[in-house]
Each structure stands twice: as C-alpha cells, then as structure tokens.
Image (cartoon, rainbow, N blue to C red):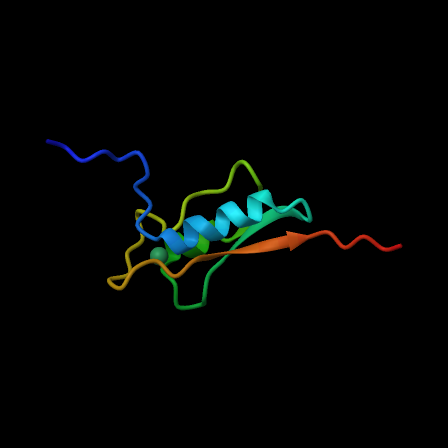
Length: 81
Ligand SMILES: [Zn+2]
C-alpha cells in the first residue's frame, strides 16, 4: 500500500509558517530567504512571491545533506496613517 502524498511537506514548521503568513491580511507578499551557506538551488528561490504562488519549502531538490535552510518571511506593506 502506497502512502498518500496528499501533504508531502517534510517540514510542518515551514508549512504552518506559510499558512499563517497566507492568512494574515497584513502580509502582502511572501519572501523566501536563505542563509548565505544555503545551496545554490535554495538561493535561486530567494525572492518575493505573491501569496498564492509560493514555492514549497523545504525545497525538494535541495542538495544540502542536512536539509534545506530556506525559510519564509512576511513582506508587510506598512500603512501610514
Ligand atoms: Zn538547499
């Protein structure tokens, strides 16, 4: 019996973080950030994405043996009174 891959995110922390950001109306975009020692694939993901077009993390093609180190950050548009 093959296990369902309905939600194959390896890192529930990243998944929950993304869900939280997506449900926050103050978050305009979602930024993917990665430390400088992340692999080049992860670094190539670094950028700002519309909330519904965010790539999954950890990046499945990540080449680091200890796993992907890219992470989500909110892009919040400050509204001045
Ligand atoms: Zn990586």
